[in-house]
Picture (cartoon, helix red, strand yellow):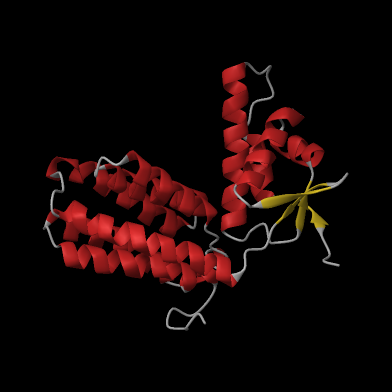
Length: 243
């Protein structure tokens, strides 16, 4: 039987200090649920909350300084994403993603995102470049400061913004869902290397290819960028084969 541990994580403590304990309206309740889910999902994605960790609603509510309702709703959302599973009379356990499942996610992303960037290069709106460069800088700043939450938030916004420029809402939803299911267990260990900075730099490189209309280069870079999920971001050497 896998040993589990009850969560009392510094990331959650930092998030908790930022949250209000004033009475909650319906709108505020949704906002609190989203903030709890974002904090927990970021910790799970990066491996700060490892598989097998037991999360309890009362403990999390105390950590975040909110009522149990938004925490419980956030946990149900995370269960729907496959990040946690219910443990009877205890709470929720962080699930483990198999190498096969991770490869399946990456395979589907490779079928969608690189061709999308190749298509975007043929009709990239140059007037959007300054705003995208700001997003790319936020990604770089997150890498340089070691703020993984900021890095992930800016990275997601950057890629969904680019995908959205193609005008296909379904494609954006599919890319968002696939990215939300991806685990990056080696991301925190990348802070001690130059790999995170190298990955961040690829966003500016992608923008350069798009702005210049280099469809083939944009597609190839996007394929390499996604493949980091099986390399750096999974805690493996980048050249290591994933059999």
